[in-house]
Length: 121
Image 1 (tube, rainbow, N blue to C red):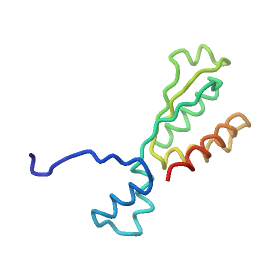
Image 2: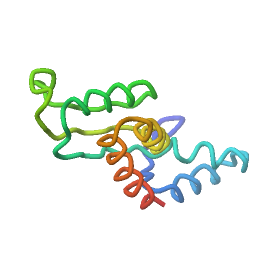
Image 3: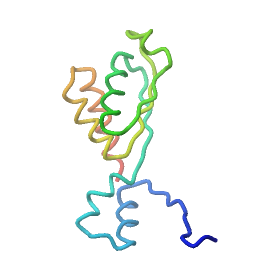
Image 4: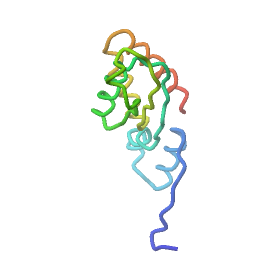
């Protein structure tokens, strides 16, 4: 055993995050701010127009997240493909806000993501 006993805590929901933050005695007002940052998710989106995937990737990178796209995305600009959106719950919610400001296809993706993210409690 080491002096500081590092170990991974499996935090999957907002309530898990709040409980863990509460357990270490953090300021109660900070819990609401920190909890969404403690949950990371990988979301697969299927049949995304690859031109849209580039915009999603740029928006996600701008807020510190990541999007994995097919290696030939720029060559297949008008085709569709699957992508992985990777980020904290906070970043994913920020992405929804950003995408909702774009054109209709991206607004539709924002709505779908919003519904999915509401289920993470």
